[in-house]
Amino acid sequence: MELIIQPGAPESARIVADSIVALLQRKPDAVLGLATGSSPLAVYDELVRRHEAGDVSFAQARAFLLDEYVGLPADHPQRYRNVIETELVGRVDFAEGAVQGPDGLAADIPAACAAYEQAIVDAGGVDLQILGIGTDGHIAFNEPGSSLASRTRIKTLTRQTRIDNARFFDDDVEKVPTHTLTQGLATIRAARHLVLVSTGRHKAEAIHQMVEGPVSAMWPASVLQHHPHVSVLVDPAAAARLQLADYYRETYETKPAWQGL
Image (tube, rainbow, N blue to C red):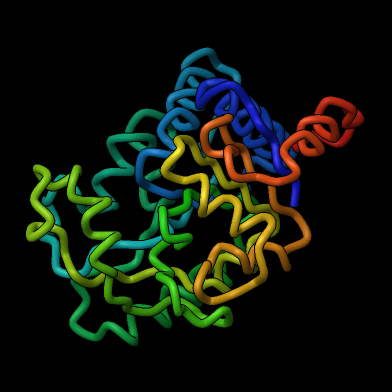
C-alpha cells in the first residue's frame, strides 16, 4: 500500500487524473470503478478539464459504480446513478450504456446483485477503482462487521453513515435510505488498482486504522492491506494520526519517476 500525503485535494486529484489518463492512453477500453461522495469530486473535475482540453477520451471505456441506495425513485437527485451522471459521466464522452450501477429498484434484490457481479466479470474486471472512506472505516457501503470475503449484496446502513450522508438530504437523517446495494470487499479487491482519496481531520482515525492498524472487520478498509496495488492519497489533516507519516513523505519524494502511481 502506497501512502501519498499532498497539500490538498487539488494536488491529489492531479496525481490520480495522471494515472487514469495514462491508463486510457495505453488501454482505451479500460474499465473504471467510480465512487460517489465528496472525496472523488476534485478528481472528476480534473478529468473533465483534461477531457475538454482534448487530453483524454472515455469513448471506448466502461465503468461500474460501487453502490446504490435501495428504493430511491429513478429520478431522485441523490440516486447514485444520477449523481455520477452530474459529476462526471454527463460531462465527458462515455458511450450510451457504458456506465452501470447496481439496481436499487430491482424486484429481486439477490438476483440483481448476482447479475451485477457477473457484469463486472464479463467486462474483464475493473482496471482502476476509485474509493473514498467513511469515518468508521467503511468503503463502498461495507459497514463495520462486514465480511472480508463479501460480494455485491444488500446492506443496512449504520446510524453514523446515515448522519454523515444527511448533508446530501437537506441535513435530515430521516430522509437518508436505510439500505443500499454495494459491491463487497472481495468484489472491490478484485480490481487491479485501487486508488483511495481522503481529506479532512474527521477521516484521520479511519486512515490510520486502514493503513497501520490490524486487518479487521471492525475497520473494513483495512482489508486493502492484502491488495497488491493500492494508492492512498490524503491531505495533512487526514494524515494526522499516521505514525509513519514522515516515512511516507520520504518514500514518495524519493520514488523513481518511472513507477507512476
